[in-house]
Image (cartoon, rainbow, N blue to C red; front, top):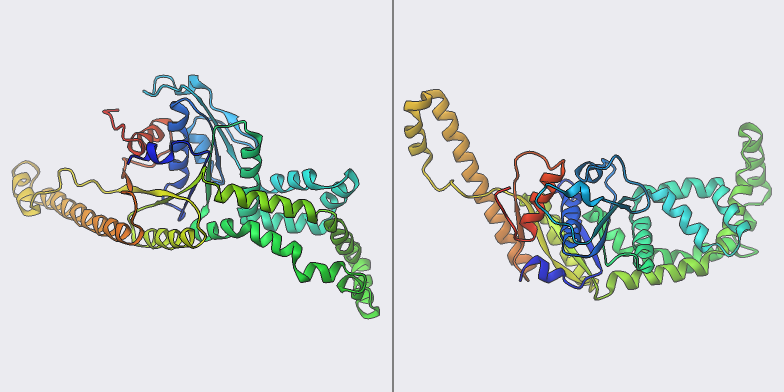
Length: 372
């Protein structure tokens, strides 16, 4: 079964895998292929290097989807029958928007957003990215603006946090720690003790920061958001496990990424999440590498001379070794993951940094390799 057949009818494609394997490029190429086939597609990246914007010929991407103009694709050998939209996640802004949406009233919203504790915590959460990624995914799916949303996730071990984010959020709001703090006789009350009060008083005089007031105000305001956060977490979890969602694991044939891919597949299976297949990027092609390096050296000596012919033969032998290593990795992946045959994308000349390179990856993903 082809990749196109495996993802047909899916509304959410979540691309997971190690860093440095071309995950952002493959995510964009998948979105490009679906848009070319007539669908309205949004691709969401968390890649701060802005490779996606560069590949699509855009100056920048923001926290809302931006249309890639069809004229941008003209002359590159691909017909755009649908629409391709792209955005780069601004995690801090997404978290602020979530507070704005879930706050029961304007005063609560303003109290939280202006709170010093919230500003520090939201920046820390934004750094991990997984919660804001699923929050943005949820908003895009619920908006029904797009036929398909393609999400480029953080590296795979963080993607496990991505899977757990809804449950961790629910556990926090339903957990004993928060209830204790919010209770009239709990931590919030105890920090008002005489000894602690003196410490906070000195801190305020020295720094001008009323930390105790900020902490108390933050948790009071947070109490008004509990129901909204709980409902949002349940909605996000439903999207992740919905039959119209599928996870694609993207890897390279090198040992460490292969190990990460196998590990993540096992976690998907444990969580009973939908799995759409493997994409193995940067595979060394075996075409023209079935000869004997000694014969190659002998045939080239008369033309190139002894030294250069020997170097070419050595490079030829190293390429053969790489082919064997990649083939062994693929066999290991097949044995451990099973299921449909992995989709292979060969090592291309140079890094994919423009639209032509992106289209070349698309061609291999969708089985449309051409002379381009």
